[in-house]
Image (tube, rainbow, N blue to C red):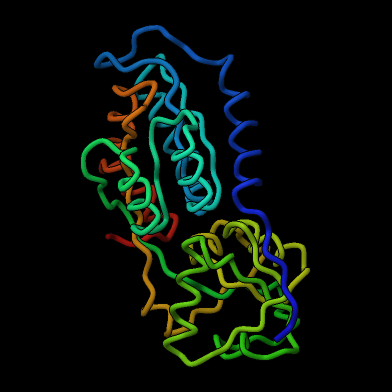
Length: 261
């Protein structure tokens, strides 16, 4: 087994949250919006939702004048931990039911979470595939430089599941705190391959090449979303969750490569 490093997921996500919250604090608009929805809605969301939720945030603001959507994107497990520790947020969108359940069990969720999309793993390699990666079995080899998500985050848990089912002992050089960090290793040509979501491969455009593998069907991740019990802006939280489940949002998710729940 090659040595690997596990990044401090929670600490990194806390830094991201603090920075984003600070950026949004001065932009809060308290004028009345449509249907009584106004002000800032703070959304904690899995890193793999970065592109789609950014788009949806702009659409939501347009649909509800007087609102401002502020995001903290990161590993779902780190975000869940922040919520349990009292971080002010209105909505949580996780990349796996288990991470959402952690927040539900802590009494931090209002109502029942709803599942809005699904996602599957894909191998990402740099352009030209210099490591000559062909499939999942290459993650059991010592020669390629390999990146995986940390086991406690959903993309890492999904990877461990497919490895176990396939009888492969992975040989990662690095484990990253979220899927975007793993993908960055590929775009910077620091690794020969990483296991990420197919939506992340699509979002990276021509910076990476994606390789499908059949074992991915055995570890489909479903994404739940819920307003939080201590939401500072409960009405906007409920409206945002409804918007994520709307027909307009479904088109954005489908275009990004997400599947239906």
